[in-house]
Length: 296
Image (cartoon, rainbow, N blue to C red):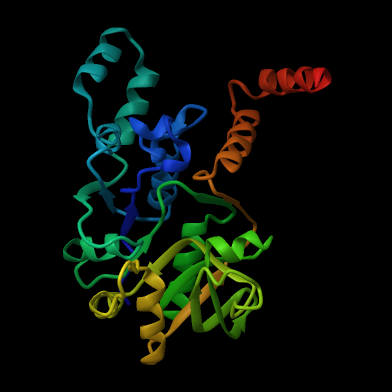
C-alpha cells in the first residue's frame, strides 16, 4: 500500500464573496490574526506527513507563491536587525514542504484542478484540501483521513452531519452501508441535493479527501459527457467509480469544528475565536470584547 505523501490545494477561485477585498488579495491569504488561511491548511498537511503540496492557482494568486517562497531581502533585514525569532519563523514557512504551482486550465468545476495535477501525482494516492476552509480536530482531519485510508485502502471522503437545510444547498452528500462508527461504504453521491428529501443521507462531504488514482480516468470520461454549461465536479467521477465496483468510503470527522472561512460570517467567527486563543493577544482581546458587549 502506497503512503500518502502528496496533497493538492485548489486555489484558483476569484473569491467573489469577499469583494472588494479579494480584488487584489487571494481569499486563501485572508489572515487568521497573523497567519493566512492557506498556511493553516498547509501546516495541517505537513504535520500529517505530506511532503509535496501542489497548489492550483490563477493569474491573481501570485502572493500565495510569494508567501511560501524564500524572501531574501526580508530575511537579510531581519538578520541585520537581530530579529532571530522572526527570521526563523519566515524561513520555516518556506521549508514546510516541496511546493509545486500550476495555473488552472480547463472547464469550470472543482474536478478540473485534480486533472491539472495528474502529471505530478502520477500513480500515487493523494489528498485534496480546499485553500479557504479547514477543520479544527483532534487528531487532525488529515490524520483521521490517512488512518481511514490505511484501514480501507480506498478513496476516503471527509464528511460531517448536516447542521442545517443550507448544507443540502452547498455541499455534496454521500449515502451507503455503515462499516463502523462514523464510516460508510459509499454507494451514492449527490452534488448539492438541495433538500434533505433529495439527499442519500445526512452526511455532507465537506472538507478533505483522499483520492486513489482511478479517479482520473472517470473524471476524463465525465468531462467528455458534460452538458452545456455543466461544471466538472468530482462527484461525477466518484459515482462512476462506485458504479464500477471501486470502493469509496466516507469518514465523519470526529472531535472537529468545521471552519468555512470562505463565508463572511463564518470567517469573522473564526477570526474572533482565533483572536481569543492567541498567545500574545487573547487576554486583552477578551477584555476588549467584554467591554464592547456592555455597550451594545
